Length: 229
Length: 229
DNA sequence: ACAAATTTAGACACTCTTGTCTAAATCGTC
DNA sequence: GACGATTTAGACAAGAGTGTCTAAATTTGT
Image (cartoon, rainbow over all chains, first blue to last red):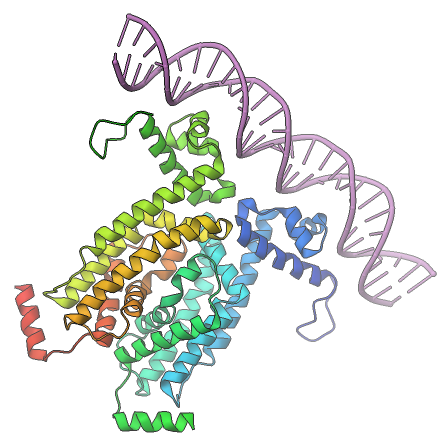
């Protein structure tokens, strides 16, 4: 295998392009049909590749499945960290900023293709591959939750929130913000944009009722007047 | 088929006993292996029944699956309504009563065998049987959420809570109370009793910070002193 | 104890799927 | 244009699973 000359990321072409389209197609089929129901021929057809190519690349069905989960975990993690980087550290309009963050989290990490797929694979096959999903747990929740909690801790330190336990606050934030989307998520559906916004708005309002530091009504009104101007 | 003489519920014996043990075993196998991976011979073995008997009762694999989901939906619904009936309408110690309710909901409806199974089947096979799960949605969430919301509305009317929208409050209550159990649920695990209690306690505290009507600190202290006496 | 209904074990045809193998075709690169 | 690497199509063996059938055994109600 020859190294590419291009410095770091190279546009997927040839061999690598096949690998990607295989993993992508496999993700879709594994999700729709489950591991047992997934059909290599179907994956090959959806990837626009011959069956033999799949075996050349990945060996067998189980190794292909592992590759799919690893890829999804990596991409989802990247998305989550990228979104956490947009957390409002020094909010102008606190409520609106938190709602924006919640919506971004939903759209870029939970409701997008990778997020839906990874969640479904964890739910359906998690118990069958303990080591694989233990790995996901470390790499995923094990790293993203502390990062989230750190952001809430900073807000508390900055005087914006009155929370005792940043870890609990982070988890409750997500629970609130997704509270109205649970049934849709269960059935594997994708909530419409206005539903996401609605749930996020209601969730953030409740979160701030519980943890927001109350400043005088006047200063709050002044602030939102400024923000909407 | 002859009607039993016993008035309403009769102890499952003979024919009916077989039917039950088949559906029970099938639920377990469908959950572990998925619909495609589920093996009729294995179900027969776990039910202690011959394969032919399964075909006598249910016709084919798909009809058996439908029967499993219908049975689970019915039993889970019964459990949820029974638990909602224990909702604290006139709470003595509000916080403790809500925590108790949340814990009961978890233990009797979400973490028990039927709850786990139904949830997993919805997640894994929901998209494949739209009509079947539309039926679940009507019979399940479509009836239980309004019942929950009605209880919160009554608390608000009784002056215990300051909520605007009882439906939103009900969903947020469940979101908060389960906030710390999500990862465990995802992987199909069963949280330990103290984890359930911890999550419920934290969730209810936050819920009450947001919506609880603040009475004077003295009266609150007097009340909990009375409760713990 | 008898008769009807139900259950059982086993064999069976049929289909579907995985993973391997081969020879031809195509692609990328020099 | 030529060469090596990769991909393709198709055939193939081996295994597993569904659903049917039959005849014998068992259970159930009377």
